Amino acid sequence: MTAPLRLGTRASALATTQSGHVADALRARLGREVELVEVTTHGDVSRAPLAQIGGTGVFVSALRDALLAGEVDLAVHSLKDLPTTPAEGIALAAVPPREDSRDVVVARDGLTLGELPVGSRVGTGSPRRAAQLAALGLGLEIVPIRGNVDTRIGKIAAGEVDAVLLARAGLARLGRVDEVTEVIDPFQMLPAPGQGALAVECRAADVSLVEALSVLDDPATRAAVTAERAVLATLEAGCSAPVGALGEVVEGDDGEELWVRAVVLSLDGALSIRMSATGSPGDAFGVGSRLGQEMLADGAADLMEGPQPGGPDRVGEQHA
Ligand SMILES: NCc1[nH]cc(CCC(=O)O)c1CC(=O)O
Image (cartoon, rainbow, N blue to C red):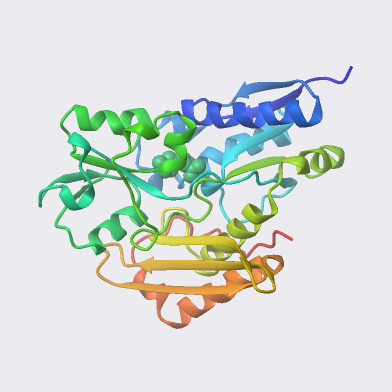
């Protein structure tokens, strides 16, 4: 009998739920036993704003360290938390089929954004969501919050905020989509690169596992998120920059086509650059990179003022 695969995960309800789904899929597809190993990350322990402690990459590095130390065999991350810089010795072995990528509103009394009275308080810790919400011009006050999904939604009942903005995918995985009061169309708010997708990583040297995990890979999702992350890398922006991007693989006249939309905003949402591009899913990295280049040529770098937590992670990346 082969030893069980040890799957490293953060300990949050969201992380263990999505890791549990991956473990189930692996048991079904590979017939291997899989055990979850909870790894505590600095991002889970610290109460400081994410931007101060190194961005959402802090959630990822502890899991990668556990992989490289041989404490776990594979790790599952929310793909949007992965820095765009490749990690030495780590393979992105699978990108499973994506959940809904959109952002949603959870508001008091079932209200939508348009129904919230002017001056209502909307909680989000994401500069991308804050800037795009401000750009809608609804007169809503943005309140910086963080914490897990439960904590954030709890601030509504506590009267601290009237609404919060969240990823639909996280709520779906937690079985809480019924609390959503509005799904925001990507025309109004483009999601974070990789939102709603998972990343399954293992040691690059573990070639038989890299190969085995590929059964979980969804090529259309991989193409979409590769393009989105190429936009982000080209803009030299970090995970907490006001950048949204959404790739979609659609059936065109000559087979599959990749569509990518992206937006870069000033932190206050007053200025924005919005562009799109199409190409072949096989050239996802090129499509996203060229889109990012076009946005830079239009002045995208000047929009993203302030300290950039992703600044040092400036190396472009190929996910062939
Ligand atoms: N920022 C943290 C984070 N990372 C991944 C998700 C869940 C959704 C996903 O898989 O994109 C969330 C919560 C949220 O943004 O609401």
